[in-house]
Image (cartoon, rainbow, N blue to C red; front, side, top):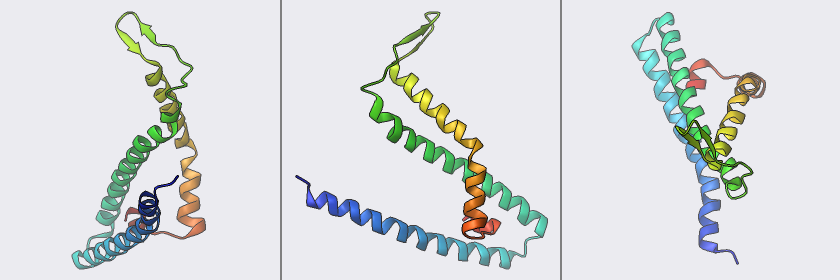
Length: 136
């Protein structure tokens, strides 16, 4: 039987998180645009700082998604892992779980070759996003 209290919290989170995320993004975007307009940043410096912010935000986002999703995707297979423990010259030992997560990490890394098409679809085809808007 399902615990209604836990289910209510889960469904409430599904509703509240996107709304709160949108509110925080709007507030952060408005503050960022006002600071840029107030500071009268030169176009070249604005481009530099925007690119740097996008690189850091992209790296942080990729790390966060990878760290969370590798456990979600590969964690369910730990008990049924087909791999055997591998020893390399009695110096290194790779357990079946480590090999499984390495395989998952490699699969995520291969996804980097497909991410440009997804970003272009989100950033231009669905909704045109400015560089500052993409950073926020």
